[in-house]
Amino acid sequence: MRIATVLAVLAACSRTQPSPQPKTETKTADYCRGRNTYTATPGELGSAGGSAIRPAHTFSIVARDPTTGELGVAVQSHWFSVGGLVTWAEPGVGAVATQSFVEPSYGPNGLALMRGGTSAPDAMAQLIAKDAQSASRQLGFVDAAGHAASHTGAKCIQFASSHVGNGFAVQSNLMGNDKVTPAMTAAYEAAKGDLADRLLAALDAGQAVGGDIRGCQSAAILVVSGDKTAPAWQRKLDLRVEDSPDPIAELHRLVVLARAYDHMNQGDAAIEKNDMAGAVEHYGTAAKLVPDNAEMVYWQAVALAGHGQVDAALPMFKRAFAADSAWIELTHRLIAPGIIPDTPAGHAAVERVLREAR
Image (cartoon, rainbow, N blue to C red; front, side):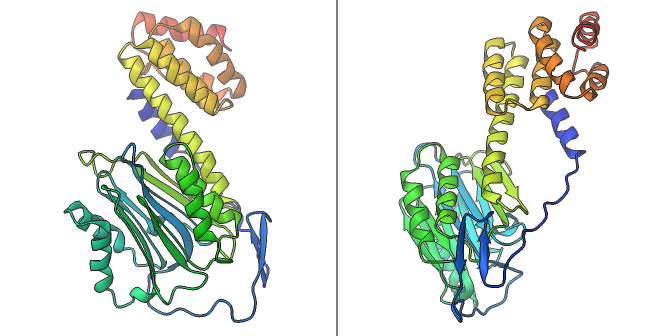
């Protein structure tokens, strides 16, 4: 879609500054702006062995939605960019979390076995049997049929535990207490909404009872279709918070934003099919999700103006122009790439917008 492409190009040009890392105390960990505190006792952390690319002590959940077939994994840790190695999923195949003293090859290798028809428990068992350091690993697998499995090695740092439920598996290690896995399990089973909502509810619950003994830093969520014919690279959600004092809260915000942009894309698709009612519905839903987002307002206006709906677009252009005059300059540039048609009607629409919406 033309507008979605432009949005992607503009997004690639943006830059953000990294968030400062929160201060930590020697004995008491600050959980996400002081929600909870936990004081370690001497010798409580124990020890762990084994080799790994890097540690990813964390709590996570893998799950399959029994209604839609969607597959997903969500995670939080006090470690930078935890989603880069822990989260793996493939449409219609399965989802994997690989953590503790992490061995990332469990992700692609586990998915390859499940893609070939091996169940999640059998795939996990085969890979563990070949891993000399399996005692230092923690894993969660779920396949497209809803079979789930989890592994917590004997050398994972306490508090470490896991639970396998109906179509999901929860795992945690290096936790402040032994309540995290049970809390995540109960929250996931009781949560309403789609798979992403339920995964986030599990993370919220794990953090609320104590979470990682070191505090919070990064989080991620990955959700894919249950349709095996979907492209392997296709993601419904693939969001990461690399470094934040409150990564789960930021992940919630990004999920809402992702849903809003999905509605924007569906609105663009409806416009291209001359389905104005569908376009207005999707654009309206996006605006309700993120009402202060000037960019969404602007591109909704562009789509409408480009299809002759200038009267409907003018109030939206006014809002965007009032928020930032850069949108005025951008409007001058829309005809050359064909976003607004290079026709007398298209030129007239742009001239009217610039004249009446400034």
